[in-house]
Amino acid sequence: MPNRTALITGVTGQDGSYLAELLVQKGYRVYGLIRRLSSPNVTHLSIIRDKIEIIDGDLMDQTSLNEAVRCTSPDEVYNLAAQSFVGISFGQPVLTGEVTGLGALRLLEAVKSHAPQARVYQASSSEMFGHVDREPQDESTPFHPRSPYGVAKVYAYWACVNYREAYSMFVSNGILFNHESPRRGLEFVTRKISDGVARIALGKAQTLSLGNVDAKRDWGYAPEYVELIWRTLQHSTPGDFVGATGESHSVREFTGEAFRVAGIEDWSKYVVIDSKFNRPSEVYNLRGDSSKAARELGWTAKTKFKELAQIMVEADLKRLSQQGS
Ligand code: F7E
Image 1 (tube, rainbow, N blue to C red):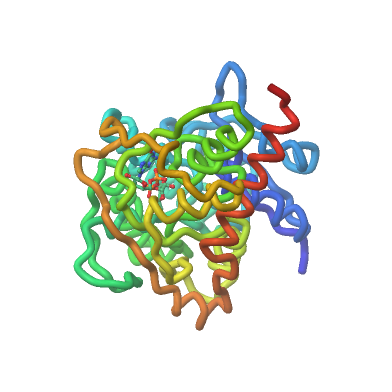
Image 2: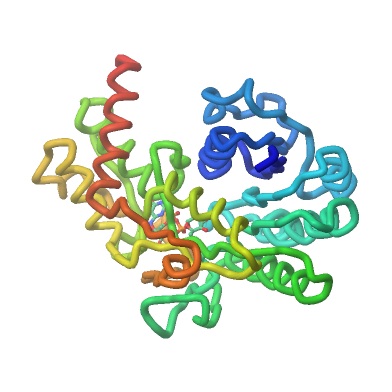
């Protein structure tokens, strides 16, 4: 197969960096779109920084997206950029709508005008299901988002379906449930826990503050999910695919497992419940059914809950031990 070209938005993030590594391995020419910051956060790209090309652009700015698509002529476009933290979206709802919702539309417009044959992947989210009336959730489950982030993702999802139907573009949504790794940002709960537990185990912190520990999520391992992202665009037809492990566990269970990995059995004395981490409207329980992805794309999640907690806590223990006190 001749070398293909991919354009990734959100390339500095967890998913973007793992996907860039996968595509480089597969022989793609990879362009990563980066929003201008005075100190760009390229830590996750250290392994492949010289193997990808960085271009400036911003989902808020149509001109820069047009130019990025025009000058790279991509075969595949992966829209992984977003204001992705649900908690912050309540305080910054308009920005979240602009970036996470309208940003996807702007990218679709750029592709429609400058590379209409390109295949487009949209990072849709299980947060679109939100307040669910059935379990597990699959591609036919109705959306009832519970945050400005979820609302924006629903907008982007339907914009993609519309461009597929209206302009016959190859646009697919991956409706991915939570997926985590040592590259997860520290504000997300699994990483906050793995980092906090490692700090406590190493004597660098005394407590870990959490919000609603009864919330349940379907947590998978991010490097496996970028394989699903790639497969979604290799399918013969565009479509929408759920990616999930099929298991649901509470924040409390993840906390207990993380402390166990660090060798601490009696952990309740270290955890402080702080209502400042509660959300005005919460998503209580999510569990996905990815049988369509298994059937049509040959993808299943391999790493489950306990192994995920182990990978994350061990990585933070190692990182923090190397840092010294
Ligand atoms: O929260 C509860 C919190 O922020 C998970 C994003 O990648 O996945 C992620 O969204 C749960 C919630 O992720 C704390 O209330 C308790 O119920 O790790 P999270 P999220 O909101 O599920 C989806 C699929 C996305 O698309 C998003 O972009 O944990 N929780 N205590 C807490 N959450 C945080 N962050 N911090 C706490 O202290």
